Image 1: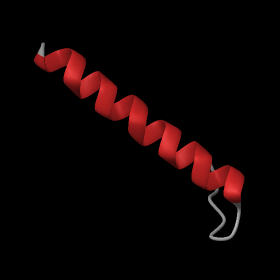
Image 2 (image 1 turned 60 degrees about the vertical axis):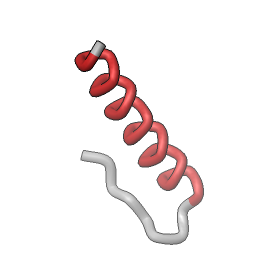
Image 3 (image 1 turned 60 degrees about the horizontal axis):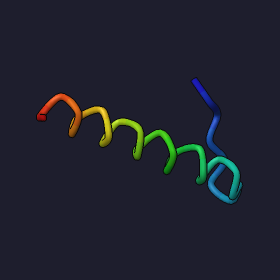
Image 4 (image 1 turned 180 degrees about the horizontal axis):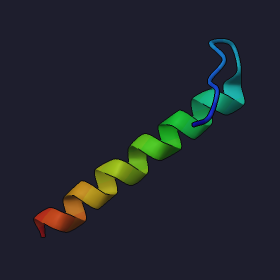
Length: 31
């Protein structure tokens, strides 16, 4: 588990990237 710091921009990018990957996987399963 990655420790997310509220003010850390890199952590925000990692969270956004992870969310995008999850959404992409969901869409792929739907197709």
